[in-house]
Length: 290
Image (cartoon, rainbow, N blue to C red; front, side, top):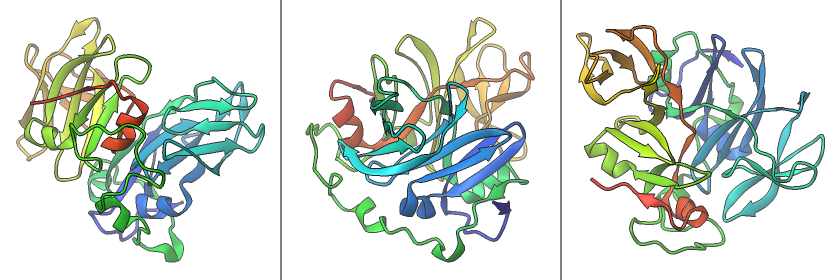
């Protein structure tokens, strides 16, 4: 990793910040290797990207107190990346974050929250970020054509669901029960959604200009908050609780002023993916509509 360097502001990235250590990983670079094993803020993590599903997820690499490293198995489950760990040889589903074969079959990996956004937006939030040195790869993404065509992975859809076009992007959550997906096209119109999914009160935030979708638990100190979006005096987009007037930074979940100043919203595990990928894994998933 190197410190912040000249980069296209619109370049898509996966960002992670742990214990004051912020790092960002180019999606065009990740498309060529899919997994980066790193240590951020003293925590061993794996940053993973499935170009066929358009899904980025971060994991803690420590399992039962032992640090593991992950690689690409070359296998797919419903077009989605299947990883393996070098230490046990177990296979892991990236989409489900779960072991599927070997010693760790049925075990869930610990999620490390990441932000899928643009380099410019990440740098505004984390000006001291370190950047993955891409070498000669530059900003070229070998999947650029695939992202805009109509193909559903390499093996096609397992579940044809015409509620959306197969390559429409959604943010999905509720993996264990009652999964629900929010089309980015709907969030473009309504960028803050207060909802209840899989028994959890959540708020979904979307920034259309960077296609950044984040989900938080909206219960703080036992109080369920109701959010809308406001613009601060300096033009910053903020989440405001309608009852207390507390305002939160949507990219970090931290309350910056108001009755609950200093409070921290907890991230809820969610993924951005193509619709066909989400509906293949969760054919009965609820779909948010305006």
